[in-house]
Image (spheres, rainbow over the protein chains, first blue to last red):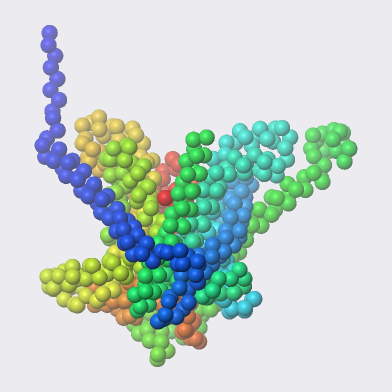
Amino acid sequence: MSVTFTLSPVSSRRRRTDRAMWGVLLALTVLALIPLVLIVYYLLRKGLGAWSPSFFTTDPTGSFFGDPGGIRSAILGSLEIVALASIIAVPIGIGVALYLTEYGRGSWFAGSVRYFVDVMTGVPSIVFGLFVYIVLVTSHIGGNFAAWKGAVALALLMLPIVARSAEVALLLVPNGLREAALALGAPRWRMLLRVVLPTAAPGLLTGSLLAVARAMGETAPLLFTVTFALGATANLGQPMNTLPYMVFTDIQSPRAAIVQIAWGAGLTLVALVLILNLLARAIERRSHMA
Amino acid sequence: MAEATIPTVRAGRSTFERPRTARLPDRALKWGLSALAAMILVIIAYFFARLLGESSGAFKRYGLSFVLGNDWDSSRGIYHGAALLVGTLITSTIGLLIGVPVAVSSALFINELCPRRARGLLSALVDLLAAVPSVVYGLWGVFFLAPKLQPAERWLASTLSFVPWLGGGTPTLFNYFIAGLILAIMILPIVSAISREVMATVPAEHKEAALALGATRWEMIRMAVLPYSRAGISGGAMLGLGRALGETIAVVLVIGDAPVIGHHLFSQGYSLAAVIANEFGEAQGVHVSALFAAGVVLFVLTLTVNVVARWFVARGSHGTRGTGATGMTVAAPAGEA
């Protein structure tokens, strides 16, 4: 007794199409990565040449013909402004997310808040700059241009990113934990502070770090809020130098030595953003393993 | 306070209920957080109202011709911004036409075709593109992309001189095409990330069914993956469009900054966001109002695109993962890496 199945083989035309499409998709994936390779390559090639100890320890001189100086004030300014923006945006963003997950589940008000937070993520960053200009600069609150006003613009940009990622992190906290805390007699606020927030902490940190990384690289909101200064200052009521702004203005210089500074500052900026991103990833991965 | 710990039976009140004072922090937290959430709505409303208020001067003066008239000249004080709107739309369209096919292809390859071990690395690399600040894209565009591509553009323009709008003209160093290409690279990670996320929601049963019926991998993609994720991918593309429309710094550096409607793909132009970044510093009077008006047009444009995009993404996620998961990617376009 012999039973023979004849499975009709895949026709050669179909197999060819399959192979061909595999090749096309691979080629387009490689194409997607080419810009990354080129950007990293040119940043390193031109940027590393500008790096030197004095590059990081001196302020830009602003002189066109002489020594253009370094980028110390830009690094410090960027860190100061982004730190202030984070101090504003992270607590508010997490607070909004707490409201959305713990109090507003299913209510129309929470739904519309969530919707408008999403809408905020789509607002172009330069429009935030315009808004802060209208509200804070033209009204001359504490002088014209000031670092803290730029921080407010960046905070507006970060807020929706923090809020949305925090909401995701809070939703991942098992309801059983909340119920256990309440069943043990904890009031709701203690349950939130002692159980929900610590459990979600890695996720909250990851989302916040990504928002910080995003804010670090933004130029447009700083253009007419912080503007520019040569020296380093700790006074947030003054204009300040920042990395993205410095790159932006130095690109447009006709002098090669100043363009060189732009490459060096650009490489520094990418390195900072990358460190924040990798940190966020590492925290995310560790929390998944735990 | 000692009273509070001893359950006493009182009329109309549960024995185990906490006294009013103990519930105070709870109420404060609840109302505080609600106020915070309400603040978001207030800020957005105030935001839009102030922007409209500041731009009303230009809108009153020019009316519809602010976006339809083609004459933007600050030396004569005339602000008809059709060239800006056209520049924004052209560069974003180029970005979309180049960026979306590449992004979706890479998403398909990473999710469905490549070896499992390479998947994490490849998606991390694509996501890395989102970590590059826009000013660095501008830097690279100015000193590498634009000069390197100029010979190719010249060749294309002269070879295709019979094709209207593509050939014929003389390519300038900075032009619509370079700006569009940079935008394509910039929207690639977000479109790819959303596509990957949507494709991951395609039920394994659908894919296995296609394979069991004898489909090749590509046929499985065409029959099971693409139809299921089409809405989500469209939404991702729309979100990419939203980003492209609003991108400022990279575009201002490589679009050529001439307030004219270019006659061909390789001619210089301007965009709404770029004009604000460039001219705001020196603007006075009506000029300021006109730039705010450009901001309003940009805001409304991106808002519309985003609202449509979110509708698509929500429809495309089939309710399997909820809006939260998609929201994460959407909310953290710079990150993901």
